[in-house]
Length: 255
Ligand SMILES: C[C@H]([C@H](O)CC(=O)SCCNC(=O)CCNC(=O)[C@H](O)C(C)(C)COP(=O)(O)OP(=O)(O)OC[C@H]1O[C@@H](n2cnc3c(N)ncnc32)[C@H](O)[C@@H]1OP(=O)(O)O)[C@H]1CC[C@H]2[C@@H]3CCC4=CC(=O)CC[C@]4(C)[C@H]3CC[C@]12C
Image (cartoon, rainbow, N blue to C red; front, side, top):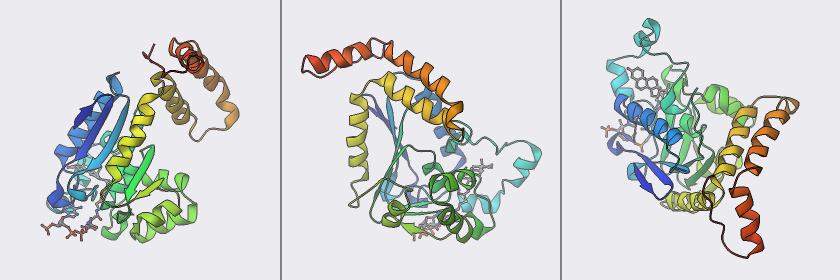
């Protein structure tokens, strides 16, 4: 994990196993997301993987020795909230995925919780849990059909097949395809654009988008207005137009 100014770069780092998720990695991710939500200095987060790989989901070798089912049935682990994969826990800062190589199973699942997604052209995506008679518990059974066309979501979930970055872009699972090795640089470029914006505005936009997911639009306007009015009442909302009028870059203070 590395903080550069207001950007936090989170790197899944177990490249020898294609960054498959260990219990330790899940713990670190959980702590990281708590930090992101509570640290006002962090304004945008980039999630990436080490060694040219994003993430191969759960560690299947560990799972072959110690199946999680007992922990689920005993109540020791409640899979209705998987904070590390941002299922049942959302960030209040924008999360950008910078993907190289495989983003499979849990790797694609956590991708569905990110806001902006960039991939190198050889990156691969898929939810292949059913291949091993597992269930994609990381959120994608619910999220994928909401994020990409239903028939494509069903195809990916039921066949477990992998797709390359250009197809992922075509179906809207990711937003950018860049030459291999350049996903992180592109993520920084986008993160810098976000960091230059008013942090209160950015976080308020994110909040309304998150809170209105799945609701009828008429149910959203009251809260949308309250959140928006609070942004308009801020010092930064005075500084932005003033900077425009004075032909200079705005100096936002998050107040
Ligand atoms: C519920 C979530 C989640 O939804 C469930 C899953 O993610 S299931 C995982 C399914 N994963 C896959 O299908 C990917 C398998 N891998 C591949 O297909 C390929 O390897 C690849 C396409 C990724 C890469 O192919 P390559 O040809 O490039 O490379 P390859 O030669 O195949 O591999 C290189 C070496 O890497 C090793 N490797 C690759 N993938 C894995 C892997 N997934 N696991 C282990 N090792 C892998 C490969 O073997 C090679 O090694 P060699 O030594 O060189 O042979 C769940 C997500 C996290 C779960 C939680 C985890 C912690 C928990 C512990 C508990 O006790 C309680 C439960 C839980 C909290 C658990 C709960 C469910 C999750 C949240």
